[in-house]
Length: 447
Ligand code: 2IT
Image 1 (cartoon, rainbow, N blue to C red):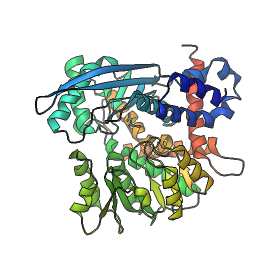
Image 2: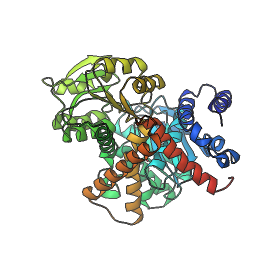
Image 3: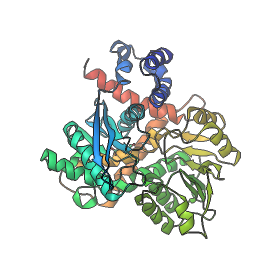
Image 4: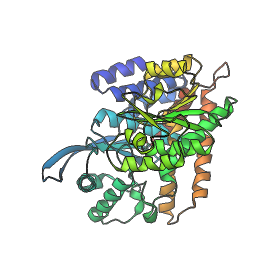
């Protein structure tokens, strides 16, 4: 296969689907050499099949707001690939959601899930519904209307949605309540990220952030460094930023920044446990502003409007918010300010120019599909608990999560070690994930 030829075809077929095209290009460029050593893959046209979703559902979602006004959004579920297990991946509620965004996320999810060591295929879904400023009742009515269409597409052995940006345990609760009413099925394993009293796994809320820090620890250890005392800049203040902050502080790092769409909160003496707890309240308010942290803790945090977390001096940058949130200019500014490591926690958080800059300027870099895989891995552990009608202790889940993150790091090292001994984590993650899915597809024939 030739990446440029495949990309030219996809560009002509899906013009304007920029996130999807960006994600596919990154993976194909990484795997091209390895793939071409396998004529059997080429013969079965594995790559041509892998870049297209198995199927996509698009549906209208109509609901009534608090003023009695009828509103209509669009809902989607992209079932991307089922080679290694049932479709699995989150739901994103965000005003900018498009088929391109969900295709990129479903594509990434396929390789990420392959890296977790668990049998899960890739999927993603969501809606252009904007949760910002919505009341609790509006959120509930929207979730119910969304599930009215989605329930026919999902099932515990078929497709298992979870949360993503704009979808947390509250939304999963409303979605699950409506699913039961419509499907008359009471198997909790149809969704993950549930509340802990009704089938949710202990530690699932923390898992993406905790896993990211376990991966970062592995990467630093391999580079002969220690996270203790490091200054960490984090973007976002949602579920992922929260878990990452918690674990970073527990490991002795100093979290000096969090951010939001309104600007950055600098915390020169480091975030405190009380501030980390307050992040949950900020998220639950649906105001979507990080300035509230500086208002609540004026002695420790100060807010600068319009600036990103990457303007704050740090050792380690952890993008935890949204795709393409870290540009090449941001990467240069980070480096100038002394940053020497960036672990991408958000899906495709770094623009291609930023990754290129990091890799050519001595900044350790690892991609989201490896770093953030602890979230979906713990969803997989939630499914196991649901299927066997048991619940594990926090310690058991944490041990398994830790083991999985160590395995993902090992796989990156195995496939990403270069001739000069350095580790290309982008290549490592992409090749490890891709090879597993490609081999499974090959063994299952032309379908
Ligand atoms: O991007 C992700 O891996 C997630 N949003 C979590 C998906 C899941 O099924 O837990």
